[in-house]
Length: 385
Image 1: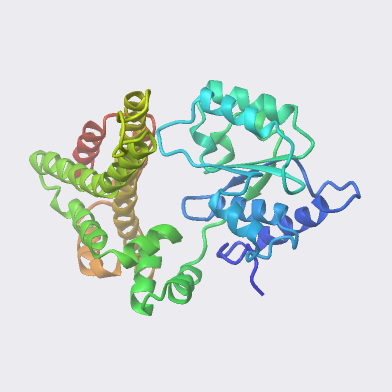
Image 2 (image 1 turned 180 degrees about the vertical axis):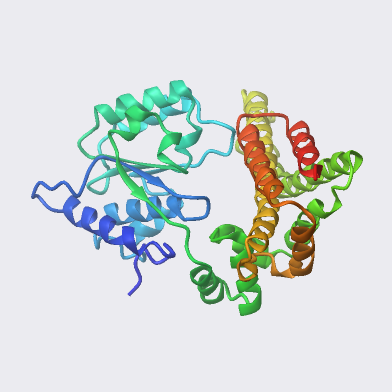
């Protein structure tokens, strides 16, 4: 039987909790199973946003989450009038956006018993936006449910997380991700196994790798960078190459989309229609859209670099496993010989230092450090013996 929870791979431990809360929400009996605010946390790719959306679907579904009715389908796409799905594509969620959201969710539910807000990147709230959200959670409407998603609890204000019920998702196993790619996406078993292994349980990343040859080619080039760091000059070259790959990948994904968005907005203001041309305010609206697109592109480049750094980290992780005598735990089996050789020619303690340097660079990127300078500093540290 189909349900809204079918896409939650390896998260059986939370499915029963959400089902119990949905049942309690449809009952007149007071219960602690249902509350007005929830936080879904978990590592990238664990499906925290998918879990929150599935919960939202189940709350407004007459059958408690069948996945096939009109309510479930419209809620999943954000088209349901009682379900708000906030997906930020910029670097942050600003206070103006939260205030506008609070105005909308103050209304009573129009169709179902609940008005549900899913915020997929609650960790990107600015301080003022978080404080505005806190007031709404402190003084909730009786029929409004907040579902916040973040990597960890510490990415949210202590005052917010203390008023929410916490749901912790786990990274799904390679076997579980492999089966999803095979059964849901029709990917060959060999490719599914490779993608699941190198993506480390990130379902979206695994599908992206398995279905895009260019992405696999870029990843292969990135994974060979540690083998090329034999001088400072090579380190600077590697940093530039990494940023170039990430920028090209991000721009390819955004350019066609940006053009479509601008054309659609101009048409909405009357471009191409007979008469006097576009309506008043069109130029300002296009300028605001282009500003949002620029912010989104910046984030996409940073996210792409972050993903590349995680891939490089798996190289040093494999080296560390070999140095610890656990050759069977290698993730990048396609580089088995190179990893064995590298592990035998470099001291064990430097491997740990290099992994720490990669994690520090990721933190700096998250704090809006300049991407190229960050990568140059990192590659210089990795080039040390």
